[in-house]
Length: 485
Image 1 (tube, rainbow, N blue to C red):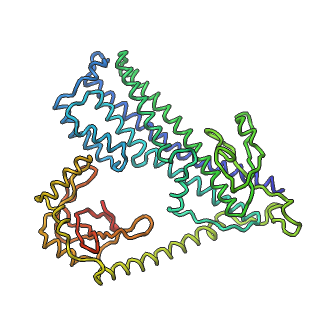
Image 2 (tube, rainbow, N blue to C red; image 1 turned 90 degrees about the vertical axis):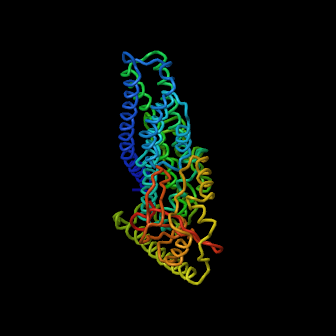
Image 3 (cartoon, helix red, strand yellow; image 1 turned 45 degrees about the horizontal axis):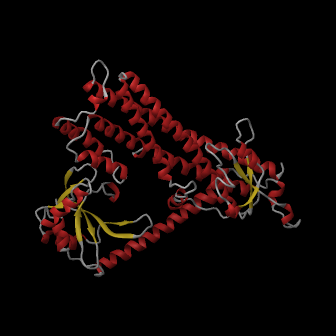
C-alpha cells in the first residue's frame, strides 16, 4: 500500500467513525424532540378543552384576558414548574419568566405561548436538551477524530506531540467561531425560529378555525422541520470539528500542507467536486474557504500532503512507504493519551493540595480579617433596611430575594472564628481560589433561598466570603462532596 492509499483509507474510515458518533447523538435528540412534541400538543389540547366551542377556537376567544383566578392558578402551578426547570442563567428564560411573573393583564393566547416557549427553552437548554446533546456529541467527535489521526501518524512512523484533550482544552476548542456566530448562538437561533413558527401556526389556526386535531398536526409538522434543521446543523458542526481535529493533528505532527479529499459520488456538490485534490498550507487553514465544511451537511475531508521533492533520499519520512507498525489503537491510546493524562491529573492534584495548604495557612496567620463585616451582616438580616433594599434590587432584576441569617451578629462573628479554614475551599474553572469556603455547621443559622424556585429552606450550612478588610457568611445548602445545592 502506498502512502496516498493509506491516508485516503484512513480519512474515509475516520469520517465514517465521526458519522457513527453523530448518528448516536441525533437519535437521542430526536427522542427528546418527540417528547417535547407530545408535551406541546397536550398543552394545546388542554387549552382547547378549556376554551373551545365545538372543538374550534376563534382568535377573538384566544386573545381574551385571563381572569384573576386563572392568573393565580397559573402562578401556583405552571410558574412554579417553570422555575423548577433549573434554566437560570439563560437570558431568554429569565426574560420570559419575568414577563409572565409580574404582569397583571395577560391573554389566554399569550399564556399558552409562554407555556410552549418554556417547553422549547427546556428542550433546547435544559438537562439532556438539544444544546447539551450537541455539545457533548461534538466533543466526542473531536476527541475521537484527533486521537485516531494522531494514531494514524504514529503507525506511519511519524513522531508527533499528542495533545491531551482535557476539559479546559475542549472548552477552548468548542469556542472556535468559524461561521460568524458563537456555538450557543448557532444552537439557540433554531429555538427562536421554531418558536416564531409555532406562534404563527397557532394564530393561523385560530383565525381560520382549525380543529384541535388539525392544529396538533400543524404543530408536529413545524417541530419536525425544527428537527430537520437541527440535524443539518449538527452534521455540519460535526464536519467542522472532525476536520478541525484533522488540521490540529497535521499541526502537531509537523505537517506543512494538506489536500482536500471529496467523497465523489452522485451526491457530491459542485463546490466539493471543484475543491477535490487542491493543496493548501496548514498555516492558512480557513474552514469554508480552503477547508471543509464548504456547505451544509458537507462530507468532504482532508489528508496530509507529502511533497517528495522537499526531501533528499535519506531524509524522506517513513510514511512515504506506508505503515511501519501495527500496534492496536487501545494499546497506543493507553501509552500516549491515558498515561500522560493520569500523570497530569496527579500533578494537578498535588498542585491543588499545596495551594489549599497555603490558603489555610494564610487564614490562620491573619492574611484575611476574620471579623464579620457589619455591613454584610445587615444585608442578610431580614429585619434590616439593607436587606429589604437588597430584596427590592433583586426583584427589579427578576431575581429571588437573597438568603438570610436568623442568628445575631455576635453569633455570626463566632462562626467565622470557629470554622474559618476548616471547610471546602471553592475554586474557579481555571483553578484559582475565589475567596469562598463551604462549611457544614452543627446548628441552624439561617434560611437558604433557592434562586431558581424561590423555595426557602432552613439550613445549618453556610459559605464564608473572605476579604483582607472583612469577612462574612451567607446561608447555603451543601450537597455531597462539598458542592452547593
